[in-house]
Each structure stands twice: as C-alpha cells, then as structure tokens.
Length: 72
Image (cartoon, rainbow, N blue to C red; front, side):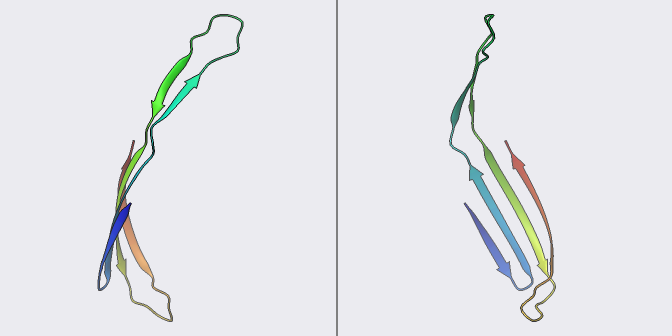
C-alpha cells in the first residue's frame, strides 16, 4: 500500500508492504540424530521517495530522485 503527492515540479511517495507470517521447518536426512529447526518468517518494508522534475519535452520528463527505506 502506498500513496503519492505531486505539486508542480515536486513529487513524493510513501509505501508500506508486509508479508504474511509463514512457518518454516528444516531437518537433515543424516543417519545420526540431527536437530530440527523451526521458525517463523514475517517481512515488513517501508520506503519514502522524493523526485524533482526538470520539465516535459515531447512527452518525456527527466527527473532526479532520492529515497530511503527500511526492511525487516
């Protein structure tokens, strides 16, 4: 999910994404007793971006942008 904003030559957007929780089990097929590992996996990500447009010529708009984000 996300949203964006545009005002004249400035654009910005924020996004947030998440993954449903999943359970994972890992084991080996070795003849000796090996441990099994279980765990849960859940992902989240948030990003913020900003852009500056340099005008439009013939349907083409060059821009420069920067962003920052975090994921876990």
